[in-house]
Length: 163
Image 1: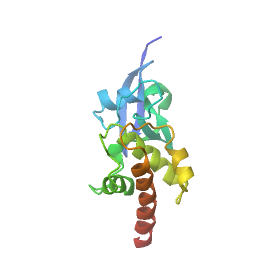
Image 2: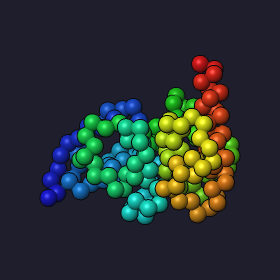
Image 3: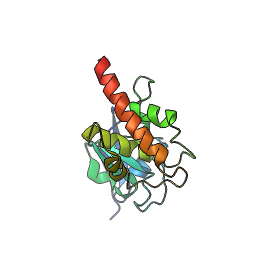
Image 4: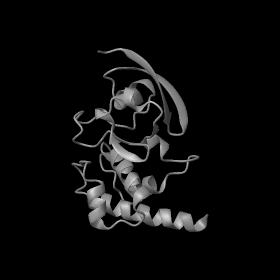
């Protein structure tokens, strides 16, 4: 059945009501209805991680997530990481460490890293590898990405010390 329903989402801090079809994914809603194209459509099978967003604090593949099941959920996309036009520690670290390469996997990697750092403030290299393991990058060989996650952890700690 492919009926329409209205759902409410909190997307990057803003309440949004959207009309979705029964089979429509969060990826489609974000990109096509809300214009948030930072979330990438990669494999569309949940393998590459380019579509990763945060839903209620967890990294989620938006290409596999049927939107109708997420009524009332809190979603964060790459566009929502920055606050008041200031890059988040993850965004800043990815830029500083050159962990962006072609950029296609970057938003998904950043959201996976952000989800990891919200749960583990100072992850080991092995924990970082596990935290980003569902996200594929064909450009960087992952060293710069791992370095960026470590740097983001340091930036988060430094910013917390300033508060």
